[in-house]
Length: 265
Image (tube, rainbow, N blue to C red; front, side):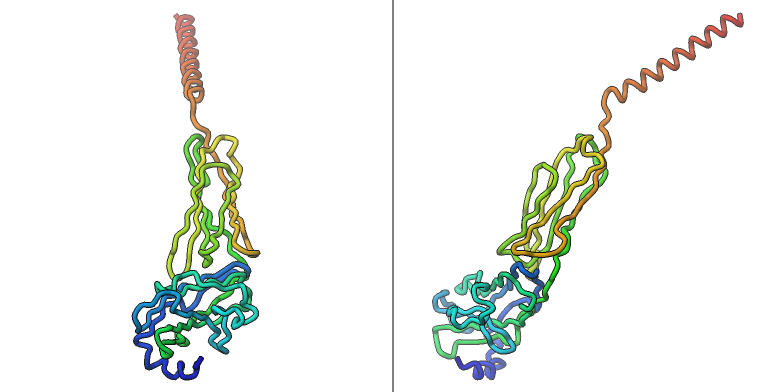
């Protein structure tokens, strides 16, 4: 490959060869990171099998992804793959088993089979990766003061950059759970779990814990705990006893007054 010529021509063809990536991504060490990527080229749209895609180090052109595994940098073999369809101009890359030295920057290169000249390395639009050594604990949202017999909802969520291997969230309390995932932009995702249960008086002065499990051997705070306090539900005995007690006291006072009045007469 004539990389030197490609670099010289980069400025000339930059208006027709275009790439969209995030300039910086965060990654949990030992998990995976997905680098969103889309590209545009001047030639007529081609099917995936007529497009060759590569990702390489910016500093020394070592390949971290290549169709030919013998071309790969040793430390990346078996750890990278394309997630998108090249025919749809999607060059999204997954790096698995992230290591604390996988900082990059990484650049995308595309070669079309339409012509020997139809190739381009986006060396001015590369991606750096910021390593996160320890995971932050999940975010847990809930009301601490609950009413016995009334449904309570707890929400637990974590943000991440590994949508190809979504984290899981589990609860220490039984109930109905709903798990969801959403793209919050710029390569970031949020995993969210909702727990719904009806508290009883046995739940008073206890706690609910949410635990996250990431893809890979991630280290850090994996749990978040919320103490709960349950207000006892009012029942008929709570209503009638005070009323009966009040009526009884009133009747007793009335009888005493009558007795005193009769004695006085």
